Each structure stands twice: as structure tokens, then as C-alpha cells.
Length: 378
Image 1 (cartoon, rainbow, N blue to C red):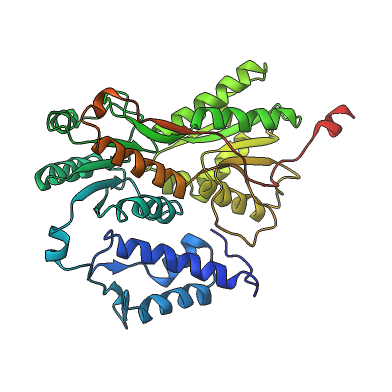
Image 2 (cartoon, helix red, strand yellow; image 1 turned 180 degrees about the horizontal axis):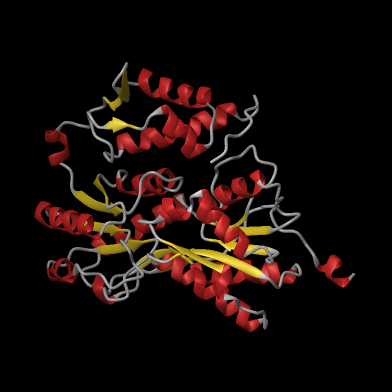
């Protein structure tokens, strides 16, 4: 990701965001005492911040005793959570998430934490990195630990889940369980999610209403969110009689992400979609990466191509072009999931009641779409 031009007005905001992200990883227990923390170089590349901004955030974390930097070795977590004795006195819930190294994790976790800690629950966090064998390990661990409830972000949810034996055991033990962000078609638990298909439909509709008829897209195929966003995209094109061209669609997965976003691969996508006036992209992270790629080639957004996306990610605030995207409720989504789990834990018949919820679609105030109706008319 290309670096931003720092300015005095947003330096403080950026370093605080990075500080909060790192602090959440450590206090939640995702990164434990002695674990290696990301290097300055990795953080610069990930967030697109200057070295000074990254150093300021790390210095504050170091001053608080969260990390220690060892010359010639790297940066390590140096924070110990509550004593085991105190933790054992609290009821626990298990939280399984797919990723921690993204812009959504801190706010989603904060929403869950704000509810659960208020009610005296300890949150045990596990990260699968979208690997099914990791999900297997953590499900077995939480079953063994006897957690009071589970919040699960599914792994590779566009495919049938192979951990049916463990999920059936969760049902047998009557452990209240709710999914967050997604769910499995072959596992009957409720979920709290974004309205992914409808969001994609509305984004595509907005592009069409602004005169775009040649619309390409990029979606992730190994999770339900990507498949639902593809569904909304194709349904909208069909409803408005807009041509669908399979050559204009790009797919990627967690495992091949770096390969698919290499310059060579992005150049291939760019050549295939050169006739497109607009693109629907899976999320803001890949949108900004692709915008950086286009900028290097002198292609302007939205003048030359319009881009829409998902998440309303608060990354790269200094940009003059902000991607128009469906708002991810982040904190509220985490809070709603935790509240529903608490209600389930007080409901002996939770398996027979509906605790599912989809957030309504809302757009941010992005300026990445060009209205080309006037140009088409002339």
C-alpha cells in the first residue's frame, strides 16, 4: 500500500489508530506475553503510514509496558493478562475469529467486550487465519474448557464445513452459539451479519443510476460474504438488463491473495477490465490497493474509473478520494452479537428461537463514483 503524505492535522489520529489496534490485540490475548510483534516495516506497509507515525504508536505501547523492543532481535509482547486465579473465577465465553490483522478486528472486538465484561464474562479469543484445521483445534479446546457460550466467525464459509462432529457436540451439550459476519449452510446456528447481497445490489444499482453499464468486479470465493456480494452484483445486472461479462470478474481466496495482488496479476486484471467504467470490489482494503496500482499507471479514480466497495474502513484518511462503500457497523455488530448471545444463555429454549440479525444497508460519504450520464448523452 502506498504511503500517505503526512500532515499535522491527521498524524495524531493515525498513530492513535495504530496504537489502539496493537493494544487490542494484546489485551484481548490474541498476542500473548513473549509473542513477536510486527516490525516497523510491516506496519508501515500494512497501514500506509510513515515510519515516524508507526514509531510514535510503538513508543506509546512500549511506555505502557505492552511491548518491548530488543535491538537486533525485534519487538515482543511484554504484557501479562490477569492472573490465572482471577480468570478461573470468571465464566468464560469462546470467541473464534478468522483474522486479527485487519482494520475491523479492534472495533468488532470492542463491541463484544463492552457487553461481556460488563456482565462479568472473560473472553477467550482464538484466531483461525481462515484455516479449517485451526477451527477444529479451537472448537475442541473450547469444548474441553467448558465455555458458557460461543461466538464464531466461520472459516471458508462458502464450502460445507467438515467439523460437523464438533458442532453436533456443541448442540448436544446445549452450549449457546452464535455466528458473526457469516454462517455455514450445513450448520443450523443463528448469525449476526451485514446484508452482503443487498449491499452489493445497492452499490451496483448506484453505479447503473450514474450511467455505468460496463461494470467489472473482484470477489473473494472462499467465504460466504464474497459469494453473497457476487450474488447481489449479478442479480442487479440482470434486473437492469446490463451485460454480464465473465472476463470482467476476478476471484481470489485467502491462500492466494498475495499472488493475486502481485503487480503482474493486477496488470492482468487491469487489461481485462480496461473497457469497464466502474468496478465493484470485495472490500476497502483491496480497493485502496488497487487504487494505488492504478495511480502508478496514471489512471484516476473516479475520472477514469469509478470504484465501490464494502466496510467504510477508516484507513488512509489523508486521501482526497474516499471509496464509496457499504458501512460495516463494526462496534455495533460486535455489541449486537454479544447481546444476542447473552439472551441465548438465559433462554433454555434458545435453539427454537430466532436470534439472527442482518444490519440494514447504509453507504458512507465516498466520492469515488463519477456520474457519466451527461457524457453518455453527448
